[in-house]
Every structure is written in C-alpha cells, then in structure tokens.
Image (cartoon, rainbow, N blue to C red; front, side, top):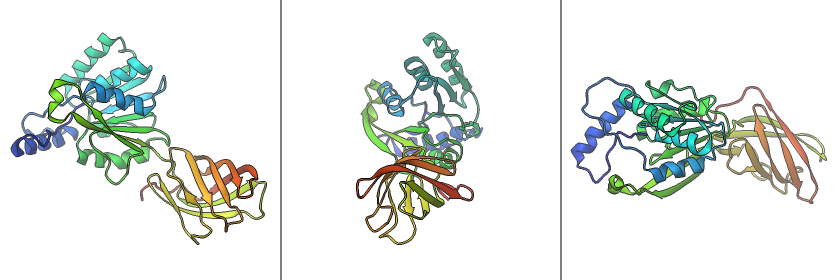
Length: 292
C-alpha cells in the first residue's frame, strides 16, 4: 500500500509537496509534481487490518493503491483469500508480482496498473485503503453504490468523513522507518444494507393488523418517522443484520432481530409479554440510497 503524505513532523514544504504528488498519483494524473513518496504499511498494521476484516478462505480482497503488494499477498498467504491490487506505478506492480511469486501465491493474486477508480467493487468481500483523505471521500459513494451489504472496508490512518467507522483502534508500527509516527489508526466499516423507505411489518403470532414503518437512513444509522412513542428504535446496522425495539406503547412492542435482503427483512422477536415468534417486512417501491 502507499500513501502520498508525510507526517506532521516533516517540514511544511515537504508536506505540501507530498500531498500534491499523492493526489495526482491517486487519480492517475500525469502532471509532474515531483517524486511521490511511497510509504508502505507497517507489517503490524497489515496484520491487524486483515484480522479486523474477518477474511474467510476464497474471499476477494482488493487493495486500492497496493504498492509492493504486501497486503493482498498476506491475505492470500495467511487467509487463503484471492487478491487484487490496483497500483498506478508500474514499477511497483512488477515488484508486487515478484513478491507474490516468492510467497507462492501468484495463482491467487494479481496486480493491475490502472486508476483505482476503475476497480469493480461489486464482488469484493474486503476493501483495503491507505490513501489520502480527499481520495477516500471520492471513493465513498462508489463503495456504497457497488459493494454488497456485509462487505468490509478497512483503512489505515484515514477515515471516510462523516461515515463513522464501526470500529477504530490504534496499532503500534514496529518498523524503524515508521518512527515518525509509530502510533497508527485502523478503521473498519461494514457496508450496511439499504433499508430506507416505507415497510409493512407482519409477525406470528400476530397482535392484529400489520404495522407500517417509514424509515430514513444515513450510512448504518436508521431512524423511523412518526410518533416517537410508537416508532421503532434501531441499533446501528451491521451489514445485513437488523436489530430494533418497538416501545411499550406499540401493539408490536418487543425486541426484534433479523436480516435485510433487497426489499425484504425477516427474523425473530421477543414481545413485551415474553411471547416469541417470527416477523417479516416488505418494502414498498424501489430501494432508497444509503446516503442520499
């Protein structure tokens, strides 16, 4: 992985030049802004990023700005994943391909020398990033539009703006060259299901008529319109996992959990009186965007 930015301990002039060069490289620009600093992700950070991602054998892991390929190579070697790296610098692509052969994973990974915005994210299980903040923000709508609910995004050092992470932590970088800033940040997002819209909720055993739910959504956070005394209160979505509580004033009062898939949700509930059962909900009309 690479990053076109130097840490705050560097001089202001170096920082400005690094940022400019990084923006140009991240976007595939041919403008000559001087050398682009290549800053590899420390091995301890690579290991923790992959661990947080919860990679399963066969998962497709894509690294945008893959540098020497260390992250997708580690995903293939340590987790049995498939990997693709997008890196605009052809010399780094050659280096990554040689490293993959040396690690014995060349059959499961590949590296493409092209603009990272051309990557198809529709089948990606885990997306890894170590990019400039501005590039992350440009990628955010692409991630939300293309990646499947439940897919994971892991970023080293920089976040995705107002899309708050599902998890964030600090990781100690152990390499000597990382001494400028040994304390690194790692962020995890789980791409949320799209649940905004109007729904009809049914359950068995039934308290009577169906319940209408009118839901707004911003990233993993869901809010219900209508009377607060009757409206459901949602926990943050975790991929396709849905959890909400209907208050005591509602005839459907209880704790609900389940999964969302396209225009349907279903799961189990425990009613306020202890009754247990199943529920399902159908959405009216087309799916709404996560972040309109």
